[in-house]
Length: 162
Image (cartoon, rainbow, N blue to C red):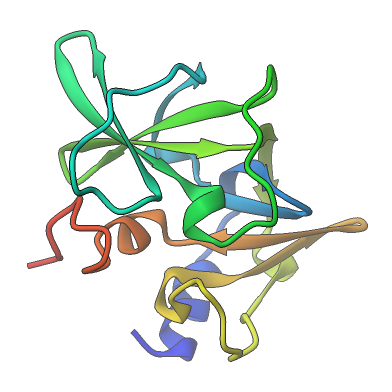
């Protein structure tokens, strides 16, 4: 998907709601419709030979859920586990995945006029997974296509789109 198509998708009529969360000093937003629930962090069961950012799996009401520490995935300077650390449970293409973040901020409704295309810069985040930037007052959000990010080949968690 090219930059213009992503921006067109972002700025389609009407405001969208994003769950905002923090990783280190940055604030990110993901489509609220992808979020199933938010839970406190609990140590997952480690999986042998998994990449370091995959912390393991948890049993969520009978469903085995892989847990990805986004702080490790995005090379954040620190990844402390404290009372603010949460796991966002996502429902992506009928696959349940959990992501560990520093904290959840709130749900924000962003009108189309507050959305901008992301600059094309080298980053640890696949540029195709960055929808754009959203601003509301003095806050700047990095809006992620969490489904695309979780279906990246290095994640191996969610099958690619058909």
